[in-house]
Image (cartoon, rainbow, N blue to C red):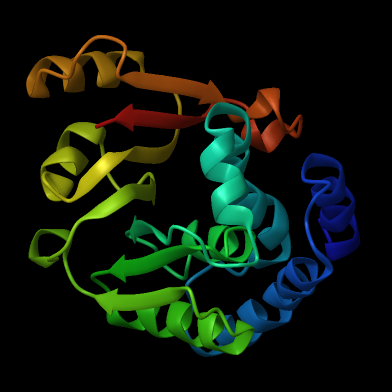
Length: 225
């Protein structure tokens, strides 16, 4: 998928996206290709599918906010900083899902965290090149982080029953997790283990929004606080 294809999809799915946001999305491909030539954070086969496999996958969280939490979507999308919603992207790698979401949501503040220093170097460099003043980066393990966030987002860094203890006490509204495959038993086991209340875990199939075969079986999982 090239940028022209991505731009067409983005305008269809998010008709309110501004020209400034679109320019930042356009800059992602050359920036990631340049950084990837120095520090390999995306496989060489995958870099040509940056917009499909990484950017659109990340933006499925934005679509989840738009359709399920529209008030929060409107607040965070504003070009004028409002409530400064705090979001932690844990295990961000080279900046996913955090950087695409930070472009979409300039009124939210994103902390991108990864335990691997070279990955944070890439995420920090790209955020800086894009002028994303709503992004900060930290090279740390989840357990060592101080502070509390409204939401924690992550892209399948581990199983849910391992992830939840890492972020215990660090969020006030919920966890939004990107994961694929059959997660029914994993969710059920996690709910039993941590005594999550019935109805607090929601799943949404990304392929109901994006019809590309790549998204078949991929989910957004929202765990309410």
